[in-house]
Image (cartoon, rainbow, N blue to C red; front, top):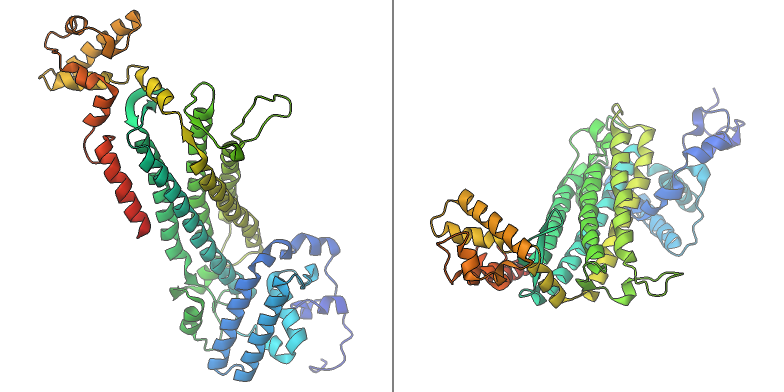
Length: 472
């Protein structure tokens, strides 16, 4: 057996690999192209460098490397980061991934100290740490974008408290509501989205570094020190789980899928409201496109594209679930496939939130059209039933009386409020002149005067309360 440092005549192409010592043949070119991840994991370079600097400082503290070597490593890594930032770094598919590319360049730059950096860790815990650092930033960014969108929605709601529109069930006119009440329903969805992501962040913010390949390491690592340097809440408790866990990605992908599902629902409403059949809103020209053949068209393309992008985000969630469903402990190379779907998810959600938030202030409401639409469909029928209940008519009897009254009004082609008192009394003798107070749209909306209701006074309170929660 040749001693360390003796002339090496083994195939040079194999020995170029950081793991190539036990191999005698070069990697097949097809395998190299198929297995590389640098084409997508290079975006983790800042997190990889940050994790390596923290690791080197810890290694110096426990005496595995010298303070001078740690300083040299840090300086070299920061220089590499500057090169990457400036677009002056050449990524090599031969070196497979972001970790080996950076480590190889570091060793070229500073020599032996660079070879010592990987002591006490594996690419398994290294990538698990990098992706958690990256996703922590992504979650914070998405929550910030959600909050920006909430602000725009609440600003719009504050202007439309007294605007009356039809509330729908089954896309049929149901009851009159405040437009601001409808916009506040959007805000509730966004508030839950932000809370879900913040909750997922708690489980995300656990440090795998120090788990090494799967069983930990024989070096006396100070994981608490590394944890503090990297801003994690605590180190992972089990090395097997730490390197193989991708629950945090699935959880974030699930929360992001809900964000996109909510955006898609809102986009569907915007598309309907902007149509000729509704004419409830006008979207600013800057957020619409035209037709290449029909010059009159103004298409709500932004809303349609955001609605469409929800499909890819939901699909990414399914991909991650299927990726993990059959993996035994611990790390498997399958996990390389986690990055493209999660990167695409956070990118797509961020872009969708940005464009949706920008579009919201451009929307103007056709208040008269909304009001007239609420007059159709006998939206105050429930108010008439509740009026009868207050006159001691059992609700089921009141329901039947009002059903018959609505049938008569349909035959007469009249709204309920246009029926004469005699006509109303023919269905319920107990009805008096004060019934018209509840048959008006304004009266109906005002009557929902309870917490969570659509009465303007309650909606104003809800807008103010939501604004306060947002600022906390």
